[in-house]
Length: 143
Image 1 (cartoon, rainbow, N blue to C red):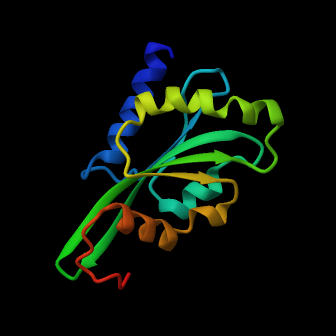
Image 2: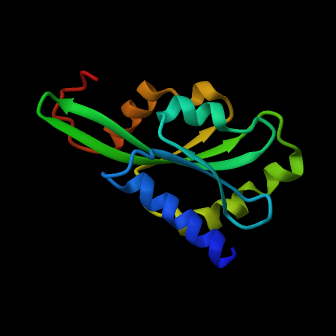
């Protein structure tokens, strides 16, 4: 990864993690065999799902906010491994190797999601998985 490319990806990662920045997702591509920032945005999981390429392997990092009750809000981070349904076989085979490189940069996440279709990124389903992974549920499982 070039120094400029690495700095750009790290800056995007910091933006997604920051409470003071509206950016809530980023997409990483490894087409050049190095993790490279390919897109980012502030429109949540629906916008992220629309930005993924159905013919490629991509890695996304997203900030998910949800309320436990009227008084509290949680912020969690998810790592998404996107293997589009139109991805060629050899590209799919390289996904696991690239994921190791991506995880060296996108280190902090609560859950990892394997996705092949936009419906795999349904926010309600992801929040439910985050609640289960988070341990204590002071909302009694009511959503």
